[in-house]
Amino acid sequence: MKSTHSTSSANTNTQQPSLKTVGKPQSQPHNGAEILIKTLTDLGVDTLFGYPGGAVLPVYDTLFDNHDLNHILIRHEQAGTHAADGYARATGKPGVVLATSGPGGTNTVTGIATAMMDSIPLVVFTGQVPTGVIGNDAFQEADIVGITRPITKQNYLVRDVNELEDVVREAFHIATNGRPGPVLVDLPKDMLNTKSRYSGLKKVEIPSFKPHTNGHHPQIAKAAEMLSNAKKPLLYVGGGAISGEAWEEVTTMAERLNVPVTTTLMGLGAFPESKSQSLGMLGMHGTWYANMAMTECDVLVAVGARFDDRVTGRLNGFSQKSRKIHIDIDPSCIGKNVAVEVPIVGDVKNVIPAIDNLANPPEVDEWWNTIHKWKEEHPLKVPQADDRIYPQHMVKMISEITNGDAIVVTDVGQHQMWAAQHYKYNHPRSWISSGGLGTMGYGFPAAIGAALAQPDRDVVCITGDGGFQMCSFELATAVEYKIPVKIAIMNNNCLGMVRQWQQLFFENRTSYSVFGKNNPDFVKMAEAYGAVGMRATYPDQMQDVLKKAMAIKKGPVLMDFSVIETENCYPMVPSGAALNEMVESDEECK
Image (cartoon, rainbow, N blue to C red; front, side, top):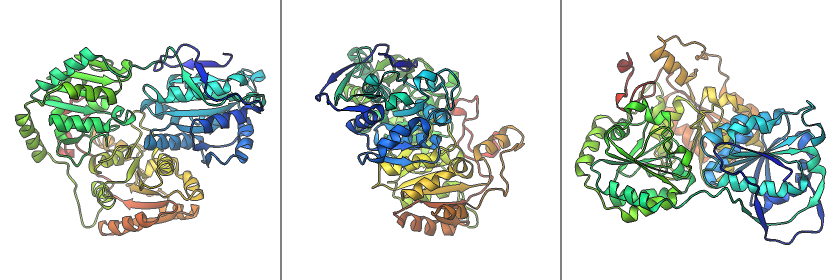
């Protein structure tokens, strides 16, 4: 292949692909732009998030007459990658982005990194200057392949139009197989204008990229025996159970074996929180009882989770009493942060039933008595007042009015944690949030993508006044395409989580984290774009605002909730503390 490609450490592919032609080659030559669009259509792509520019004008000229792809004109390339990310999380299908060269490509970087950290399948196409001037500092040239090398599973610079179709097919194959992730394809403008023949449907075979999916049987047998003999077992379920579509398998095993279940931020919805076995989310702002269960359990089964620092707290204090089973399709994740006794490399959808078939229900009555006591003594608190809106109360009311059936999308910060704690997630692909990278500005455009992906479901973006302003301009996109996303702003006039840390750990020196009264009027902002704007200043206004907003089925609705500015998010595991060293109030931090 003349096309060059770069591989990150997360991808094991080191050889050129082998593609078998399924359809008959077509005799009519097409330029590269036409080949690109034909390949996307063959691959089942129905939605493309893009923003035009000089280097990709041949593609946009092709799109002018194309009616198979739903192109969404976003207002910024970063927002486009977030929207594609939201689309991917809501469906499991890869999100697709098109940007021009130079700043168009560099604007996608934050969105690509967000997807990489959370293992989300994206395929990002960027324009590039013609091959003859690459490396000459041509107008709007940027080495996007080099820039994105650390944050993609793989990326390509296409130097031969005859290989464009193969590269596109391989990009989708790599993005969606094994541990999902983003792939970038850089398209020089002359490759988009040069003609070649289109081969048609092909099957991708990459000899060196063969993710192990079934798990090693002796290890599965060890895990089953360990689980059967446990006295205090715990299932620790991460985002891999969502991306691997293993929520039914997890639920079946948990119920049959009567094992408690806690989920990571990315795993919310993998196990129904309405079930008594659910302990909710664990970690820095997890429930008291989930964190204590993690501390006291004797057998820990990690399902598609990577033991990240927000879950473990201080590593040398993490779940020291347990023997650990770790199931993950990415071998690089196993043993990276926490040593485990039984590593199992495989697809969780295959491995979990295999363990379940061999395991016997353990004796856990005393364990459940302990957990029930923790739940009674340390419940999640939902404070309420007559004259002020508490953020927790706001989320609880959204959960009640939507019956827990909405897709909830968030930005990053206090509101994200409250939304994770107090909305009851009973369905998979109902929670969409930036976990690993913690990207402010992610929520609203991701909600646009989710709403386009799931038009029959309510989509609520719970965001903060800080995060929303980072991509508020996408109101224009939501209005243009009549996307019925509901935006619920927790307006506390500050960067809430930053302010909380400054209050608790920096002697309340709130350096540049408080907006004061300099926030815009969000209702007027919505109306200026042509959206509906509403406001709730007092608790007795919330229900009416929410019901009116949810009844509007065309176009975006923005709700501005004036919440208490000084409310802090608890429970909380302070930096450097172990999970069992949680604090539940400001007083405990002093």
